[in-house]
Image 1 (cartoon, one colour):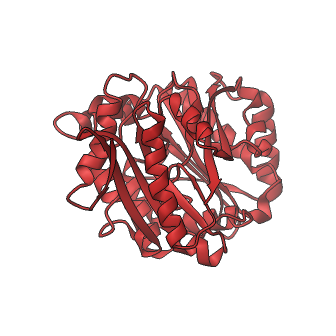
Image 2 (cartoon, one colour):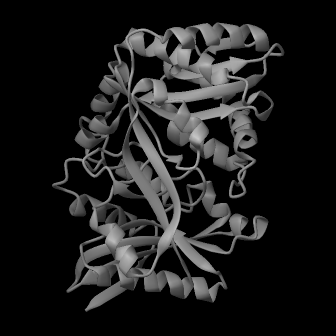
Length: 372
């Protein structure tokens, strides 16, 4: 018999988080989050996302043995501001038993009906800035810092439960040339002169932090055209700065400014930390911090994380300047492989950027949705 029990934070969070460590312990491609960071992320006393979100954590047990977990989320800002009566679910992990998945989803449906919501969709986090999407291709590839990994059987569970595809993302692995492509160099110079753009080099992590609020403002402007986008504000910005900015290497953040010293575009990349996080196995101690420091200091691969472009400058070719700088950086570091993070499958403009880099589509992920 399957039992579903609610897990209460903060006391039960470690059990909730560590379930995935047991489920994937022999999987060479699963990359764990740091347990301390994950505890903070799921703790309403720490994460400002809870100012607008209501969250329940559940675990499934069979003969008193943990066999599944799930978070159920109502983002009240999304429901009220966007009039999107969606129930989110995330942190979904189960053994290969569709009845376990069904029992967890039935609990989510129960909450959705109680709050008069219309459909549920997941896996996804509290907001636009959190992880999203179930892996459906690329099970022999390690997940990145900002994406989930899951077993191949998850998709069949959702199909059997009558879910349909919600959103879909693709990820690419790129081969980086030893020298910048000639046409990229040429276009970069023309576009820089035509638009009176300067390249700003960050000097330190503090320098990035000093520009962070302006960068988040630009991020909001960049994605404001998406109907599902909720602006990132105040405490959330402070939280993301604390959560992600310590990982940033100033050399891997490229910023473009206009004549008035205003940021009009930026790109955030990082040395790939997947192998380091795999070795750390959820903890910075005793050696986790060293693995992360070494990968940051002597990167072999890199990841594209975020690109922001002021709407006034979109379609003016600023990405040519960014890619020229990226090529220069990777050449200096000896990086020959880079990975993109999830981008919506319909975003052909972004995918067109990778065509000159022998981009191989190596992962695909989806959310699944169902009417309540």
